[in-house]
Amino acid sequence: MKNITLIDCHTHFHDDKYTTEGYTTNDLIDDAINGGVKYFMSTGYDVASSKASVRDAMKHKSVFAVIGIHPNNVEDVSEIEIAEIAKLAKLDKVKGIGEIGLDFYYSDKNKDKQMFIFEEQVKIAKENNLVVVLHIRDQKNHTDVYYSCLKMLIKHKIKKAMVHCFTADQAVADAFIKEGYYISIGGVVTFPNAKELQHVVEKVPMKYLVTETDAPYLTPVPYRGTTNRQEYIIHTIKKMAELKKISTEEMAEVTYSNAKNLFGLV
Ligand SMILES: [Zn+2]
Image 1: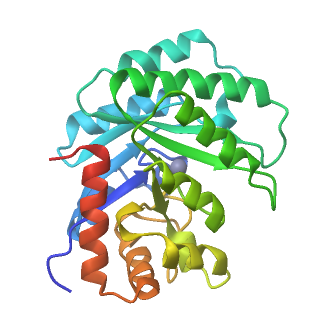
Image 2 (image 1 turned 90 degrees about the vertical axis):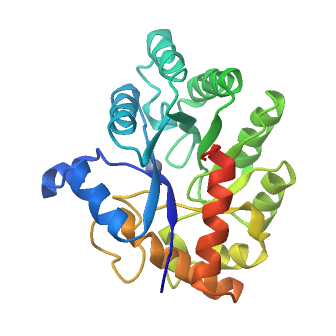
């Protein structure tokens, strides 16, 4: 394969897994660049990790920051943290607000708080014309929460959004696409039992597809079971190409240009 250039639309350089295994952000970035990854969206999930993403972005030309408070981390969040996110959002290399959204997978006990924090951050994205990077998880076999998130984006007239690590069904994908939002595909698509997701990739028009690693999580086949790394994104792209019956090169090219459009990279 020649001249493949990729964008990892959602990754976490500062996860404890990397620290434990002794990988620095520099190591990870160098290896991934050698593997064809040109840009990284270093994504936060609370104020500390968002600040770390911003530091990555300031230091590395290839890194941009996506900042925000994850729905599972809202419990102790106050207006102070929201104000910090709002302040960071003004910086040049911040391209998105995420990962934000709603997560009722285990329980909906923080439902109102999740909704409130999500909405406050959607407003920050709107004010700063940033991409909303959504983390959405519903209880098993339910999809209502996807529509709640979608409603929120429409309410605030959000133009640019992506559903991170999409794993819902075709109807949900269609509803997001209808609003012009992107569907981000991660390593799950390479899992043999991910039939529904594979079907979604077959059906979603090429112009709405982007890719991510969510590293160090959700490692694609053939590395499943090990810590995910940013350069493994090529295995996700290969699988997507196979599903679309096109070449890996073409899949890489299209997802690269989609991600550039989405995040406004030049
Ligand atoms: Zn993530």
